[in-house]
Length: 389
Image 1: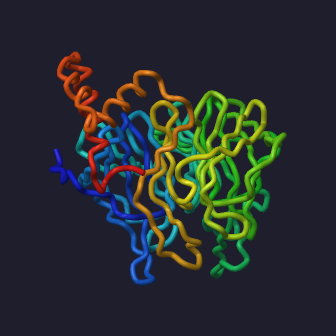
Image 2: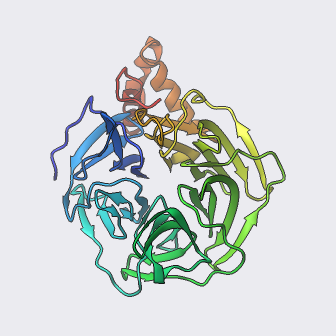
């Protein structure tokens, strides 16, 4: 077991990182920040762990086939493992895939050896869906050789090419099967989204949703759905007011029919702090009020927590293409649904026990398991610089 430094630790500010939630713990890896106008990658041999119940950070060292320090990688959690693919390191974009077991406490990286099939070309700012024990990757910005380019699914960035290597945006769909370390590229039906990067996506049931992103010089607000069983694309045309176009935002499934959108960089290059719920059945957007309207974020992460919570971590509050100093390290917990009665009661006790002697006197009378739950939650409300917002 790695020795952990605990207590008043706080994960460093960052953007373009990876974060997943597993067993009510938020795991954070990688990303970058700016120091004296230089982009600096965060250490690649550290994983930061935030206990969402207690409000405490820990840091563990990582071993094994440690990936290069990078940003813009695509990460997800599957069967207790965190997978990362792609990203941009000091040598440019990559198309390697790595995994780490989050449950054994060892945090040893494994570089996944190539099995059958052809992996996607090097890219970053892509997204993924998890379905049927497989990871489905979509889009991104990267490079291809001239003879590899298919103009139907790759838009060349005319400002970026060297010899016969061209950079650009794609709308490709690639499927990775961790069990066999195999890659496939399914033939999709229907009209696909335009090639894009820095978009947002989430899985809801057997469908993968993608929203917005950068397409050449524009930032979009369109929503598309890919049926992950039939590989059929469909566009969702809203019957309501819609969020402005954006990139570097997040999209998270929060119920059987709702997706939560937060933040990003707008079409007029403004960092955003708005939150919206999309009902995918009614095809309607609804802007919601929340406590973080003064905390714009872009290139952050958003992870689904328990009881339909969304945990947003890190990101920037600046237009990072011009001013790249506003990286953040707070975790914003969005409540998107009413909490169950049990959670509401535990939170009320934990929050008020320090100011209500009667509550404190009653805690020892609770069953031991319930005492444990309440005392763990009480630590969240103790004053500390490492708490969520």
